[in-house]
Image (cartoon, rainbow, N blue to C red; front, side, top):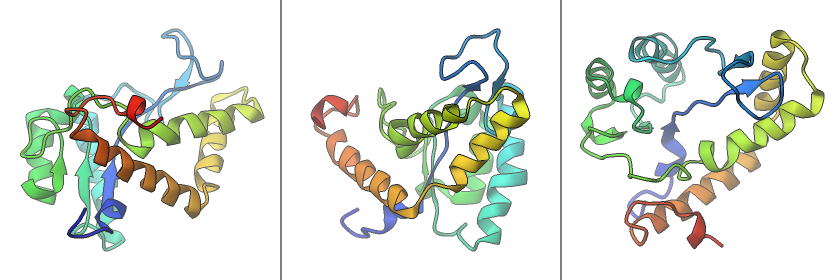
Length: 180
């Protein structure tokens, strides 16, 4: 970050969340939406998503050579075929993930803007409209994602920088208690 302060704006953080027709609480028996994926994420589905959606989008936007790819240590994210694809696509120096040269910090689920801000913000907005069907729920998610103002994203990235600066004193663990 000291060498290139804009580096944090070129990080692609991946994550997933469950949205339910019954509100922000997730129970296995409820009808849920996991972004645009309607099935459980496994290594094969994740690799297909990366190959067919994420990487082509980055190429189309001319960002593939600038992005640092950051993901948590979920088993589906760190399977050998996924790891091989990520290294071939981004190079070892632009991946932050468990089982890679730059490992995901252990015990740090509150690190990325997706975790500490996006999911809570989206759920608070999506459930205001009270969607009563899966199409309504998906529309509400899309609508709220597209209405996020760039200033909000910049603020979330600033919070990310603060959290990154707290990682070393925390030994790579939770940072929430330091941010108070």
